[in-house]
Image 1 (cartoon, rainbow over the protein chains, first blue to last red):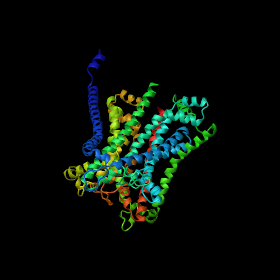
Image 2 (tube, rainbow over the protein chains, first blue to last red):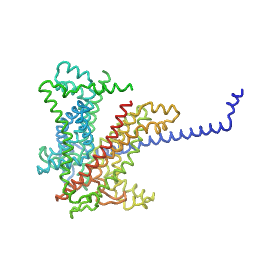
Image 3 (spheres, one colour):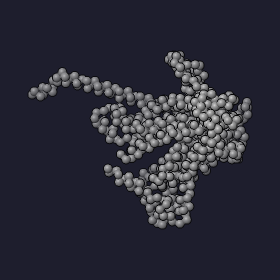
Length: 304
Length: 328
C-alpha cells in the first residue's frame, strides 16, 4: 500500500526531477526539429544555384540557338548571325586527341596498380595519380605550353589535346583500378588453369569483364575535360577560321565561350550562351551514356 | 576479429597477372607494356614539376623570397611580386570554404540520415551535377547574372543597410567584380566535391553507432551530433581540404569575376587577383622573358601549394577508408 501510495504521489523532489526531464526533453525535441529544418535549408540552398544556372542557361541559350549556330562560322564584329561550327568540330577533335592519349595510359596504369596492389611502385603510382587529379588545370596549361608549344614555336591542337589527355590519366587510372579489382578471382583462375598465358587472361577475361566500368570511367573523364578551358588557353589557343589540322591552332567551344563572354558585344554574348548550352548538352550526353553503361553492369552483377 | 581472415583472402585472393611465372614472350611484352604505362604517371608529375620550375627559375632566382612577399607586380618595370595573387587565392578560397563547407556537410548529413529513400538518389544526382558544369559556364553566369545582382541590391545592402561598410572588409565602391564574387562562385563550384566525400564518409559510419545512441534515448539530431559526426570527423575534414585544393587552382570562373587587379585590399568588395587568374590573364600577353618567367614561377608556387593541400586531404581520407575497412 505504502509503495503504491509513493508511486501515485511522488515527492516534491521527484516531481521536480520529472518536470525538469520533461522540459529538457521538450527542449531537445525543439533542437532536433530546428536542426532538421536547418539541414533541409542546406539542401535547398545547395540545389538553388544549380536550378538558377540551368534555368538561365536554357532561357538565354535556347533563344540564341539556331541552325546557323551549328553550320556557320563566327561572324566578324558588328555582323549579325554567325555560328560556332569550327569550335564544335574543334572540341570534338581535341577530345579525340585527349582520349587517344589519356585512355591507353590510364587503363594501362590502372591495370598495373590493381594487379600489383601493395607493391611500392603501385602505391606510388596510385598516390601520384591522386596528386595529378588535384593539379590545377591552368598549371597543366602552362606545362603543355612550355613542353610542347615553346619548342615548336606555334600553338597547336595537338598540344591542347595532349594537355587534356594528361588530365584524363588520373581519372581513368582510378576507375580502371577499381573495376579490375571487382573481377572475380575465380574467373582469372579458370583462365589460367586452362593454360592461358597471363596477357591473354588479362585482355580476354579481366579487361573484357571490367570493360563496361572502364568505358564509363573513360566517358566521365572525357566529359570532364571537354569543358576545360584553362589548359587550352596557351595550347589550342582558338581560331576564328575553319581548321581541322592538328598541328595548327584550333577553335574550341569553351575557348570561344570565354572570348565571347568577356567581349563587349551583345551579339557575342548571345552566342556565348548558346555555346554554353551546346557544351553542357555534350557533357550531359557523355555522362548519361556513362551512367547507362554502369547501370547495366550493376544490374547484370546483381542478377548473377 | 572475424574480419581478419576476410582481409587476408581479399589481399591474397587475386592472383597477380604479372611477374611470378611468365608464360612465353607474350607475358613479357604484356608486363613491359603495363609497367610502361604505370611509369607514365610518376614521369608526368616529375616532368610537370621540372619544366615549370625550370621556366620559373630565373624569376625565383632574381627576386628570391621577396617574390612571395612583395606586392608590386609591374611588367613594365619588370618588377614582380606575387603577394597580391597569393593573398587573393587564399582569401577567395577561404570565403568559398566558409560558405561551402557547412552547406555541403549539411546536405550530406541530410542525405545519409534524414532523406526519404525516394529523394536520396535525385538530390545526390543534382549535387553531383554541379561538378559537371564547366568552369567557363560558371564564369559566364557570374558575369551576366551574379555580378549585376551583387552590384545592385546585394553589395549596397551589405555595406549601407547592415552597416558593414564601417568595417574595412566591406568598405569602398561596389563595382561588382570582386573578391566576394570570386568567393561565391568558388563556393558553388567546390560544394559537390566536399558533399560527395562527406556523404561517403557518413555512409561508412557503422549502423550500430547510430542505434546505440538512439537506444540511449537520444533524439535523431543528438545521435548525429554525438555519435555519427565525431566518427566521420576526419573524413569530412579530408573532403573539406579536397575542396580547398579545388578552390585554390580554379581558374576560368574566377578570372571572369574577380576583376583582375594586382592590389591587396582588405575590402571584399574590391577587385583582386588569384595566382591562377593572374596566369590566365597575362600569359598570352607576356612579351618579355622576365614576365613569362615570373608567371611560370607563380605557376610553380601554385603547383607546390595544391600538391601539399591535396596530399594532406588524400592522407586523411585514406586513413578513414582504411579504418572503416578494418573495423567494418
